[in-house]
Image (tube, rainbow, N blue to C red):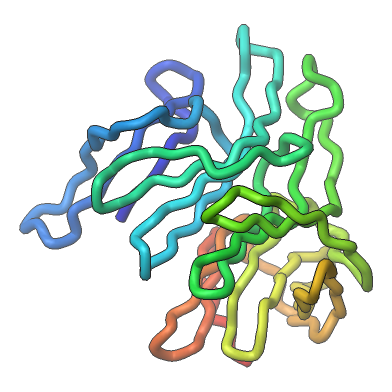
Amino acid sequence: VVRFAGSDPSTGGETAGVFVLDRAAASPSWSEATTSGTPPAARTWHSTIVDPASRTMYVVGGYRLEGGSTVVDLADVAALDLASMAWRTVATLPVGRSSPLLRLANGGAELFVVFGTRHPTPGDPYATTELHDAYRITIATGAMETLAVSGELPTNSSRALSGLDLPGGFVVLSPEPYGVDAYAATFGAGTLSFARTATCEEPRGFGWGTGITDPSTGRGYVVGDSVWQVSE
């Protein structure tokens, strides 16, 4: 298990460390890894996704506090080779953001960055604006394409959304006051369209959490205040 950055309780700020949990050890424990290359800056509320085929972790966006109160939204996209533990820069988004949804496609050759939250007032970390844009990034070259977004969009904060790559397509889960909405997200040539497909009437304990799919079963899991299983 690999984790990058986040809030550092010992300093009250953010960290840029890479931490590894060796699950094969008799007594698994976290340790900080040594990396090479130019690492991304310290941050929190970023998004990560791992390509198991190439053993690469991608880090996108997030923000950091400067001087304890000035919010800096981050727009960089970085890759960490988990075999060599070497960092490289992939691309830079047009607008900094935290908590975007990420999706790898075409055998890990493309990375989609969807939505996110930004801070319009740098001096107020609690004032946020939701972004409803999306980008397709070609990993090998860093080339970026802006997608035209359409359809019925989730209304909740990007920080509360979870994305699942299920066998039938990409699904976005949005916890609403009346339940959890499921949206089918269809990626086309230069487009991304949304359609609300279902509502689960059990909103309790959903929480904020990331989504992950088990490729052996095709089931998705959302880890928040509780662990939820999602099946088509």
